[in-house]
Length: 276
Ligand code: NAD
Image (tube, protein in one colour):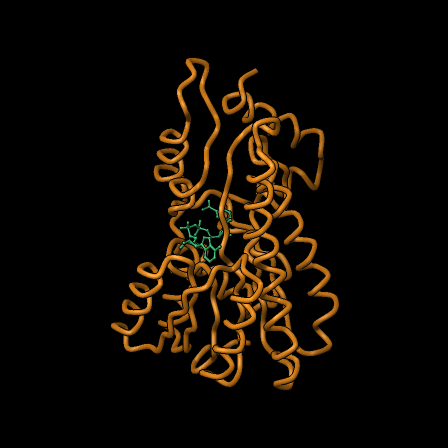
């Protein structure tokens, strides 16, 4: 797909950060947006922003981890738009904590949104995309943490590796329907995710690291607009995996060359988060 004019684009978790930036990028290309988020004010505001650009946007309040809600979302989008050209399963949350401090509720919540949210999106939209005659693109937001394990993010990393695996299988299975698939793997991006996530990481003085993590992301993270550009490029070029933006490539390449070297570097980074 090269031209997004009048294409129907569905994005989950579009009320903030990467989802919002991707929605705005598609709007500027003349796409018709169907956007969901769990927070009503966020998604309403983004839909208004898009309309003020002269593009079409329909907001939906949907919890991506709720099976029935996603089933209804797919029904509603098809009732309103008749087809879907791009599905971007993007909603996600984080939990930062040493493995032994992850509660089972943390695991369940992160996997419910980050993995089951993607599975539900695929499960309820894909048959309709095939039935409409095939064609289109599915982007699943994974993470750099879906390519390289990270200390302090056990549940998150687990969910994102799973999304990369699912996306690769989808990519292999769905090309026969003209549906292409991208696992989007962002690096450090300045969004609301650090504010909205549970952080159970402490420095040597016992201070919670939430504020520091947030400050680090805001100061050194790339803007979500850079990721949005990469999403559109990945669709145009049918890329199965899209690390984004450029700062994500060195880690990925190092890990592919030497897992030991990658782990030595990741352990060093982990020391400041988990203590030595
Ligand atoms: P964000 O918090 O700015 O945006 C996420 C949006 O998802 C929010 O609007 C939130 O309300 C919504 N959301 C949360 N739970 C939801 C649910 N159950 N159902 C529907 N919507 C829900 O964060 P972001 O950084 O833009 O995150 C988007 C995606 O990018 C996530 O999957 C995240 O894991 C991934 N990601 C982010 C980074 C980063 O550094 N920010 C890096 C790699 C991957």
